[in-house]
Length: 270
Image (cartoon, rainbow, N blue to C red; front, side, top):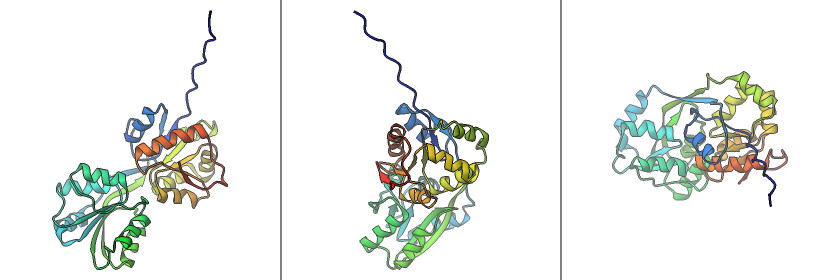
C-alpha cells in the first residue's frame, strides 16, 4: 500500500530587519531560529558619539540620584566607562530588554515601567514618587525624543541629558533591491525596533514605496513608542508580544502567517 506523497511546505516570505545589524545579527538569528528567511534593510546605524559630555557626567556619577537608560546602546556606552554601578545611585530602564542588558553587566535595576516606553517610564516615576527634586542623568541617543527628559522635568526632577551614541541613516541600504522586493510583494513582514527606523526607512524608500511595502506586509513594532511612529503615518502595526528581540521575532512569525492587517484595525499586542 502506498500513500500519497506530501508536498514540501512552502518557504515563508522573508522578514525585513530594519535595525542596525548585519545578516546573522541578534534579531536575524532569532528569526532564523523560527524558520523565517531574513532580509536586512538596516535603515539606521548606531555610531560612537563625541562623548566628552558623557565622560564628564560619569566622572561625577555619584552626584546623581538616578541614571535612566532607554536602550542597550546607552547601557554599552556607560558600562564601558563604569564597569560597576556608582554607589547609592539608582537605575531605571525603559523595559525588560534594557534591564536585562544592565543586569548582564552587574548593574541592579530599581525601576522598570509596566509599559516599555519613555512615557511609561515617566509614569512609573510619578507613581513611585521618586522624581521630585532628584538629579537624573539620561545618557541618550542623538535623536532621542524629548518625552522622557521633559516628562521628568515636569515631575520636578533636574535632568542632565548627555549624548551617548549617534543614530544616523543607513547609508548602505540598497534601495533598488528593496524596491524590487516591494514590487513583487515578496516580503512577509517588516520589523521596527525604533522610531528612527520607521522614519529613515520611509525616507530612504520614498513614501509611495513605503506605503506599498506596508500595504502588502504587516509591520511589527517592538514597543508602543515605535508603534506610535507608524500610527502617526497612518499604519496599523502589531506590537511584539514582549519588548525584546525574541518577542519581536515570535510576533513576526505570527504576522507572516496572518498576512497584512486591515488599516481599520487598531494596533494590538499579539
